[in-house]
Length: 197
Length: 68
Image (cartoon, rainbow over all chains, first blue to last red; front, top):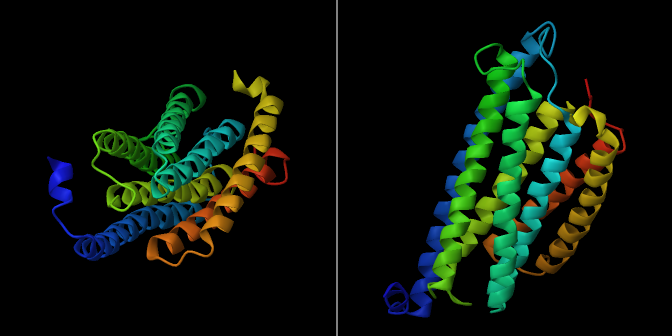
């Protein structure tokens, strides 16, 4: 029924509406960037105001697990790109395979983050220090975005299996792909801030 | 537990970063001639993804990043 309704719209109308939707979605991503930017600048301010960073008694997050976890997330960005390419070239099996790979990799990233929170940072708490507050707020917010992204991908995968999207009409997939890339790119900044800088 | 296996994690991170960087650059080359708005955004994302991979490579070889 949904597919039938979608095709009641002409190609020209669909293209025009997709253009507006894309612009709206990009504005949403920009507003999300602003939210992360606010937290990042707060973190940098707190860090520069502190005499010692991280504060005494607080261990740095474990670098190498985060490096592996980062590659898992970046890899999911690559698989998502090829999933989208599959849809653009009407290769449905490629789309399904790469989307599933992206969902698995995204879930693995969340698992790695959960492991880090529960096993590797025993003395760093949300309420204990500004470092803990900044770390958990920013990485938690990012993790929440990844979680939403995984749900988003599961939904578009199910919609695709139901025939909602076609080679010419797949704005939902474009939005999911852009959102996933956005989540990847935010992690590039967070990884640098908390684990390297 | 992970404190005792940094070398393995570094090797995994390095190899993974090289693979993902190469894939991202191939994807970027494929996207390059395309001119729609979402294609331009994808190009930017792929460049930043490559930057992230280089970041991880440098961490894996010990050039940047503090363990403690």
